[in-house]
Length: 136
Ligand SMILES: [Zn+2]
Image (cartoon, rainbow, N blue to C red; front, side, top):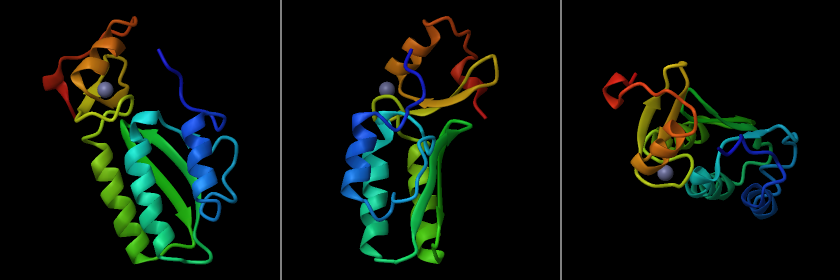
């Protein structure tokens, strides 16, 4: 099973290299989600970058209760709207592979948004899973 991402991972480095302004202050621990969300995070960053807000910077990007949390400083209403949109998109996007997905819950109370295939890998890796009907 993959562990939570660190800042050393290639997709995160690509993101930082492409949007140096947005990520100029993010810490080593600022990223805590998997590569399946690369696409939606990249699209969000493109939109944020296009707003050209000089003080806008990303503080933290992570998965919490199965969906994306994207924290910034220096934003405005439009920034908040775009972030909410991406966070909503994450609830239908597999965090591991980017396929269409839904929120899953483990018996231990963990949530992840996963497609059927990745959900199978998660369950077969020692996790006892609640049935899909037991979604929050
Ligand atoms: Zn998947």
